[in-house]
Image 1 (cartoon, rainbow, N blue to C red):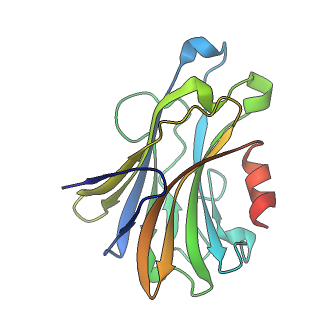
Image 2 (image 1 turned 60 degrees about the vertical axis):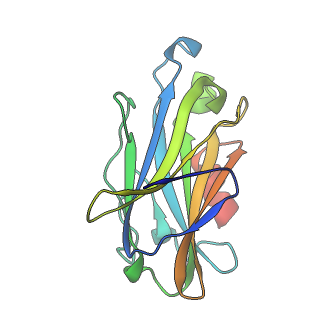
Length: 184
């Protein structure tokens, strides 16, 4: 049975291969433009920095340089129920320099389209067993990020050789490049 997490709550993963499903429903009436949200993963060293740009997984780089994290593709509309974008992680392949994987969602061209996460509802991140599709945990973001165009949904992190997940729910200004700069 899946566990529903609250902000800041942590859970042991106990698996090597996991799926990271992300979902959202934009309020189309809030903007004249379509919403294009993008899931990304930043694989960080102990110092909180990416050791190489190959450790950023996003729509233009769908596979980390150690082949441990991949994107299943860019969903440009977010239409339908369930996961809008998915990242896959084989935690047994994560480079030894990496201590955490931060999962963020950005709004593509948010400034130009005057869009923010306050115009997005029913956002969630869920971790599931990649072999069986059984959901392990889910975190539903309930904050109103009325000025943020980037949200850290959650993070996988390594402690004493074991992988854990933390529900983060932290908003930021800027876009994907702002997050690259933050972690570089």
